[in-house]
Length: 429
Image (cartoon, rainbow, N blue to C red; front, side, top):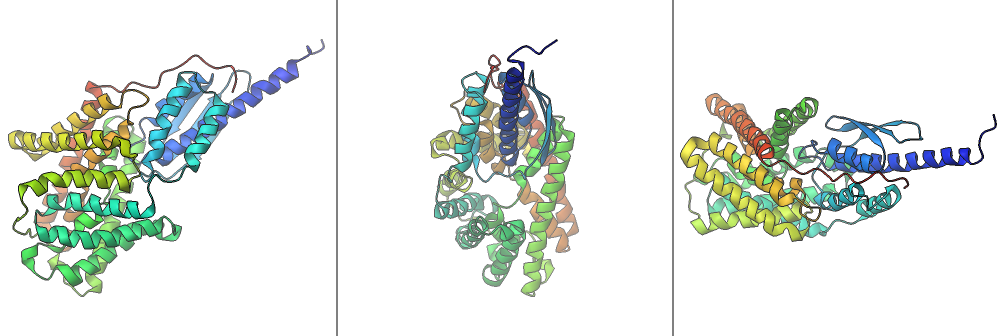
């Protein structure tokens, strides 16, 4: 029997639509994966919801740096694509722009062609701040964290110099890809040499690692450690395990850089001991440091400035809850409670397509819980020959990372995030 007239055109239309939907979902997956440094648990849900809204069935197999995506559109053949990307948190303005795009797709307000065009604009958009503001942001980020290491004026002054050095390297790496590959090592060697050579001569000012840490805090993978543990707690075993290994590698790389700086200056490794200086900062400076820290986070990670106030509120909420709970139930318990409150509050504040994405809201709270600095201090103290103190820091690291992870999972369980709305399947791109 002859094929009815028009059938080839219909088959061609179905194939074209399948190609358009698959192309959009692949690009969406890639961008979500590249910006998933704080965790990848939402990728599968958002991609699958967008696919359903566009009339496709989507299967996602996820690990930390790769996604196997299978897309089946009625009338077209199924397509399987492997998407690779290195997770990072450098351009969080793109995460902010993706949220309303995914919401429009899921609500049926945008088809594959329009969504792809909007993705083009998101990927082509310049960073929201010029390079010199990013440099300033990294310096402010470090200065806001410095009083947590040692609440002294000397610590702040040292951090201003060292953080400017580290920030200059970070900004330069945006233009020199080869430098970006070894940036944590280069930054830690440079900061170590300058610290030991210029600032760590008097033990009354504190140990050299305590002077270095604020300037290296931008590179310390404390947020990766917390995200990895949270993924493990949420059942994403492969993703969490790989991220945990990667975070440990970055931590060891920073430690090796510090050691190389010590060797270059001829300083004995026994100097790598956490001798804290006597506090001389007033209380108002300690309180104000978290505002400086939040402003630095905004600039350093390219977060749109309209999100400053909710981020600031969550930072002070996290710090306040952690401080109060620590008095009652100890440091590990206080960290657990603070992580649970942070996760629940961030989820509530992120509801709605025009609200800040949950990732942006959680990020500063991740940093305030400071698990990465414990790992750095523990490793350098061990290398310095102070075995008991080194293992004490590392044990505390394990306990705090676990407390953060379980707290985040609990907070997300108590206040579940609303998934993207699934609009009716569209019949065309």
